[in-house]
Length: 347
Ligand code: SF4
Image 1 (cartoon, helix red, strand yellow):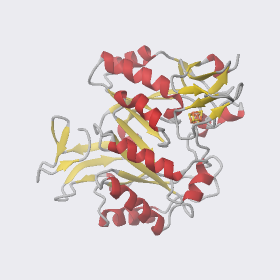
Image 2 (image 1 turned 180 degrees about the vertical axis):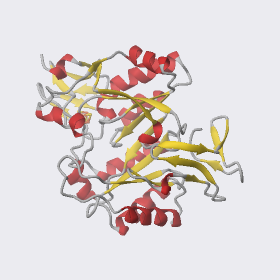
Image 3 (image 1 turned 90 degrees about the vertical axis):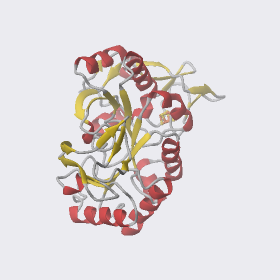
């Protein structure tokens, strides 16, 4: 029995077709014939049923929520972060390619995994007094059934537990409806605003991604966006302005992280991003009305949260950490202590 078969359970998100099974988790909506797997490499058709990851995690770490990066959801919290294997995208610059891509090439033999149950994940969070559980490192949506079990179990045991995905955002409406009652935030990548380049990098459709981002935001879930700024890929001011306009069309409150590219995986020839360029884009985004725009993946002063109304420094950050948090919290909402302005997020 293969590794993928051993750690699997029947999906709750598919239907049978004349030629196989139709997976409903992400916008690819793969029709998978007998003995084959979908684009993600981990959801497969066996005996006319869709089987999906279950019973293991590929990594289990305690990370600050700032590492995701998520800056407006319980800042300063530690998270219990887990992952599985595989990805529905195929990005050449993936920073977690051992977790996301190797399973597609059957080179998994050197990788370690940890057998888990939803209960064991909750128990670890409880022992460490951790209130935020996150599916991250690889794409969470492709193992959404396992994430839902973990999140549901944790929330039933402790109502104060919060949960989230660090995702490429290609979740379908069916996938989102399946998990929406058990998830509090989704941190989503906005990799490009050029349809052709986005498709070439990921294999996916930009319009469907934008619709998914809109769906998650309009459902009232906390959302933050990340754009890895890559030289000669998405670093023209015209494309950056298109992204700004898209974010503004949803809400100027949505935090946007512009992060520095470091050569990785199949893009080791591409240079690191010029930090000055990132900071120029941040200033442009703020000038055009976005309220919370941050730099990331390097040490920068552009990681502090500033009140959009009175310019008071609300959260002073170090690298992936909080130095000082002056936000005034009331009933989970955050306010500027100087002018009383309400800050987007959960505090
Ligand atoms: S999660 Fe997406 S890529 Fe994977 S099988 Fe389902 S529809 Fe296809």
